Length: 284
Image (cartoon, rainbow, N blue to C red):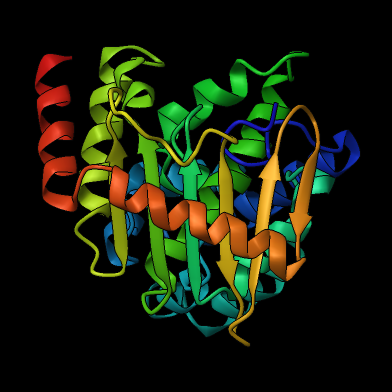
């Protein structure tokens, strides 16, 4: 099942290729950093990233942020920055993503509005790293450690949309039961809720919780995702067991939009949703 959107199963060859390219980039960064006589502890604050993040990039377990070469130039020099730019061009950001999910990833990249309703897991764009890792580790058939790291890198890279596309409108409706499940254990749940509370503070993000009890529910058909294109057309997306469906028929998409709109009225409001999350965090 593509829990968290599509990276849970992927093409093994593309997984290996991406992993190798990430490792090459990490090795290049490490050599350039050491050549400048800097430790990770020296280098990280100079480029305004955490030591942990830089370490993961050098290990080939994280996508390098797009602005890393530019941030590195004052620290490592122009030539080193150009080398990093060249190395970054060889990274394929859609590798590590299931082939049937890649079309939706392309839609996400340019969408002016993105809406999601989930009753199984927290949407992939909102998953904190330990939570996403547990989702990927639970996938059957089991993935190798290398595949998990590659798919995790792809998932976390998608989350840059929340910070890079600040004029995109994001809407999320999550079932209360998803938050109460305690998936990954108490510590992971606390980290996840803290992350959701932070994301909900972004002025372009609406995060609503659907209460467990209620006389009506417009989401009985299951999870769904909606995107508005730059041309103001709407596209729908649904996924299940190792498969997905991109929906472009205007009549069908209209029905999805109607259901999402009704669910917004049935869910807790923004303030009540945040209060519920805070209570759940205190109960973990």
